[in-house]
Amino acid sequence: MSTPHNSAKIGEIAKTVLMPGDPLRAKFIADTFLSDVKQFNAVRNMFGYTGMYKGKKVSVMGSGMGMPSIGIYSYELYNFYEVEKIIRVGTCGAFQDYINVYDVVIAQGACTDSNWASQYDLKGNTYSAVSSFELLNKAYEYAKKKDMKVHVGNVLSSDVFYGADSEFWKNWQRLGVLAVEMESYALFANAAFLNKQALTILTVSDSLVNHQVTTPEEREKKFLQMMEIALEIA
Ligand code: HPA
Image 1 (tube, rainbow, N blue to C red):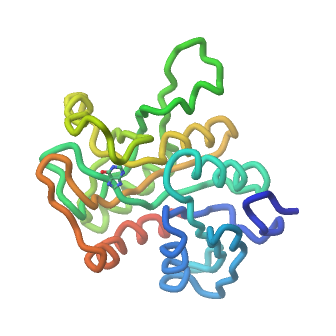
Image 2: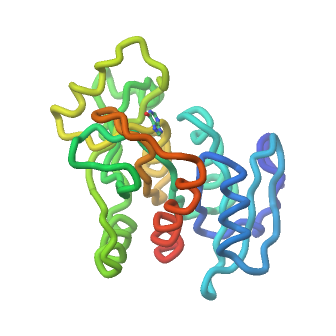
Image 3: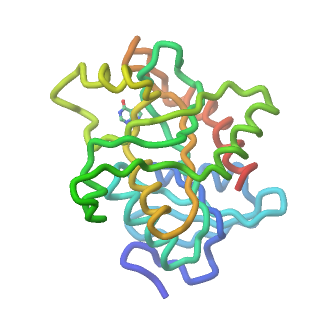
């Protein structure tokens, strides 16, 4: 069996899938951390690989950018490929002045400016999307044990990268939201709807507060910490 977006056969994908936004980062993770790697997807160049990490079978696949994209891929992984856990590993822009570039942010929940939850017909009410407590707890405990600096809290999953209002982040900052990215709300909602688990671990790539930015080379190196947490709890 395959789907319109994934050519894998049942059984080729592990119960846990790491999802970076960039399919080439999926390849990098597979090449760097996994052994006995087998590619299971190349449809639309959204590469997916399965391999072994410390005796565990783990898969890694790109999600693309934004909620429509991760919405498709995560739904298919959960619903057609019997995947139980998806751990998004991505980047975010910090909303708080105490959060620096390269810090790790673990999403406890996700707010959104998207219409994603309208499909659930909640009569005009809001749905608060949260990560799996089991995965969150494991990730936090591992990070603490390794003396890694992590922030745990709310993120904003936004449909907009280049927005009309450059000050939009201040209202989210006021509510203690840690950072902005573009995928977690849909991922968490899909997991909840399908009775599965999801977590997002992010590395801060830029700051809306003080405009610190990172270079691609630096990013590649520093993001290893986030990958380590994700792989250890997979
Ligand atoms: N906005 C949205 N997504 C992001 C950002 C941002 O500033 N930085 C990294 N991912």
